[in-house]
Image (cartoon, rainbow over all chains, first blue to last red):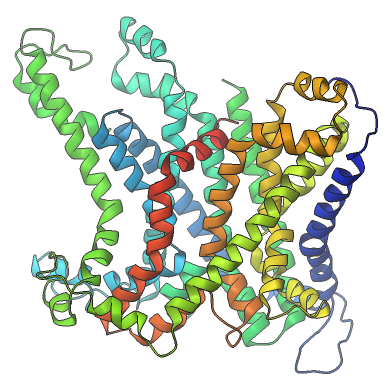
Length: 296
Length: 306
């Protein structure tokens, strides 16, 4: 707005709502972060009446915590893999579904459906499909592709793969729809001009489609990444972190330290590390993608 | 991509494909194009099938008895039975009815409070200096990136201090204060930037108070933003699992997600019950999505183009 309005009747009311909003936000985001930072320096445990200040002891312990480093490795690997696969597939599917006829519109609607279901439903559904005597093994053995059932959720590496598969299935609906929106904003003239210049499908994709969907990709990749770093419900139901902690994401590990082991202090320390890591990843990837947009 | 591979066989059958692009240059072009369209449709349908087949499983098996689910899980129910649904609804713990009601109350209370608070704060902010706007939006933006697991423990502590732990009021309050409000402020601020200042100036000259301008002029202009925020927040809060699980706790009532988690754990082999319960739990969000999908996609698009 160009000119600042003179203070008027009602400005006060709006101002106090804004203060209320900032207050609530401070109370449930800012204060918890500060409390976590403080608690990370203590040995707080609800089973012990007394809490001691332990300085950086928790941080020192964290350095040698192999369960934590395993969970971080799994979380980062899962985040990277699912973000890359879901967004690559999203661009591809968006190009495939980018038509205006009714059947394509119906398909687009359906593609987003996995996003609408709660993680708990999604995970139970896939637990049924991936179980030892589940549908996938039925299909694989009856068609002779495999000799016997595969323990999709029972062996560490396959369980990690399964979590990734389910998360990708959910996220791809989102990445597809976002990229579809970006595709629809590309002027048709660009493609016409490229064809006149003799550009093939591959060249058109490389020089028009891929750079022009960049703003969509920025949003889609950022949100995919944040979603994967936060991911809790699907893993909690699908594998509950097992077998032998192979699919224990950092979110699950924080919850375990806090609510199973009752180590509030240490859980806060892990939370602090995870917060710093998430912030660094989110900011650097968004920055990178933004720069790519500006280079257009 | 898949498109080109699916029509390649037809392209090679046509007499004179251009060496560069594989495009047919002569007469059977129309025929070739028809095949390409068909190949495209088949590829698109296969992709769609990958998205929809697990959902299809839920729907068909919800209407089949256990033995039919085990013998042929992918078949259509013949004849369909609503036994699974009536069984799920007549459970003595009423977990479906109670869960749906509790989720509904939580979503409605959270959204009804977040919308005016978010919209009014964004309007107030839009009339402040650019510097203040940037600072406040950056602070809210940080909130969108914080993993909920990081702040869960202190949030419960704060609610305990306010004597609101294990209550729906506490859950709603933490929903409002948490990342959801930040999302609303973001969307509203984006939309407000596209509203010309003259409209508000004119109303000010006419002597309308700020509160009146906000309610009578700004809110109607922000209707698309309100639709976006309402749809997304309702879906997220409805599907939220971690907050209800830990803020409400196991003994203080269930939302549909935590209720599901508890009840489905018991039926790991009773598939008839599993699918019946899942269908009932999914029907409201899915129906809502199908009903509002135009606004849904429009909301996603306006976010993506900004």
